[in-house]
Length: 154
Image 1 (cartoon, rainbow, N blue to C red):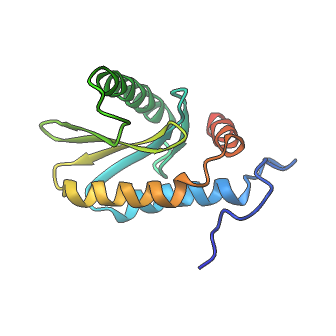
Image 2: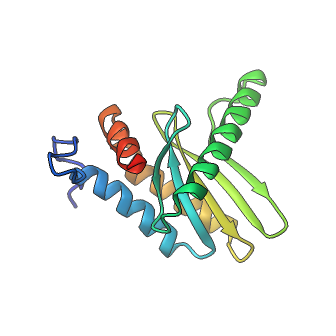
């Protein structure tokens, strides 16, 4: 199987179309969201805390709020991990009355933030998040991250 990330050009072209790598990243995020039972929404947040991609729901204002929450939680978890010498972030799980917020490292300091309802099987969601990180994480170059952040801002 060939990787969809083998193309060299990762910049948006003159017509504003996304590169194949950016389209594939967004497709992987949409696919994760739509095919994982209980997942309501998913976003990708860059190391600097900015929204990088969002699932097909496309509620940008909600995605921006979620990115801020995910960024803050990631920072808090990173601080605790550093203080207690626990290593890098794997996953943060927040269990709420009506659902869950899950955060998982992707790569290059980027994270995946997921909102799931109570019907979600946490083991399955965590497994699918790990698969997503494996599929998408290797492609996250600084150029692709910049392209994704720029595209989501439009």
